[in-house]
Structure formats: C-alpha cells, structure tokens
Length: 233
Image (cartoon, rainbow, N blue to C red; front, side, top):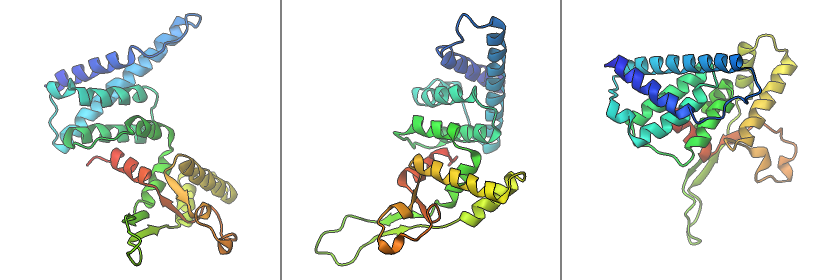
C-alpha cells in the first residue's frame, strides 16, 4: 500500500511541475537532463520521507485524500518549492505543513505567501521568530469612549544577546562584529517581511529618541499566523 501511495504522490508531483518554464532551446540539452534528474531525486526523497513521517505520527493517508482538491492544491504548491531546495530544515517544515493538512481544518488566505517565506527565510530567522511568539498585542481594542482604562496590551521583548550567541554557535567563523552585523540583517529582514515590528519605530516620544533600534521588538499577528501555519498540529 505504501509503494502505491508513493507512486501516486510522485505522479501528482510530476503533473504539478510539468507546466513550469523549462530551459530555453539554446541551452545544452544535457544540462536540462541533469537538472531534471536532480528534481526527480528530490521529489522521490521528499515523498519517501513524508510517508515515513506520517507513519511515525500515526496518520493515515489514502489515494482518495491525495486526489482531493484541498490536498492537491497545497501539495502542488509545496512540490514546486521542494525541487528548488536541498535544505533539510525547510523540507522538514514542508512535510509538517502537509501532515497538518491531513489532521486539521485550518486554512489561510496567505498560503502561497507563507510557503514563499519558508523558502526565503533562513532557518535561524524562523527560530528567532519563535522566540517572540508570546509578544505582540493581546486583549481587546473594542472599547467604547465611556469605558475607563484599556484591555489592550502590547508586549515587546529583547533577545539580542541570546540571538547573537546562537549566531556565534551556528557560524563559528564569524567575528564579534560580523555576528552583530548578521543579527541586524536578520532583524531587518523579519521586519521587512511584516513578521516583527521594532518598537523604536512606533509611538515614539522625545524620551524614546536615544533608545537603540533593533533591540526591543514584538511579533505581528501575521507573524503569529505564519508560525501556526508551519507547525504540525
């Protein structure tokens, strides 16, 4: 049964990528053939490890589910990204997303955007985002003018030292100044993708002008939804 499911998944994957743009006719056909073999091997390995993961999780998959519209849509979108990466962390996230589709009814309007973020973000950036998961807005902003006080709270946090330490562990060849530079890149990149917000840029008063930027941040609702999306519930 497992072999049959594997062949069905591979067949669906081939159909998903067959319409993708190919190399131009002027390029050497041998180069296209090599790239095709790489893509096929990545698909085969992904499907094989995905089925192993499902078995470990005790999740049942059948041919009817594979051919369903909802699963097919997300599977096709993921396969198109699988052929372009050999990063094990990203492949693991893609497998978790597929597994969650089989066990939950969660849907998002940002599916394609979130899949692109998995492709574009460095693994360390995703780990950084998880650190800020319990920051951001909480409570309610639906308050009438007659109500006293506020039930809305905004929590920010600084993990600068911890993040730089992680960077030094992952990239031992970096100097201290280079590690700080990589920290700045990660934070700016997460901010540019609307996943984090720097408190230095919001609601500032004269007393805030001397505060250091890229230090106290909080996660956006978009960032929280992204974390929910990539996790296997």
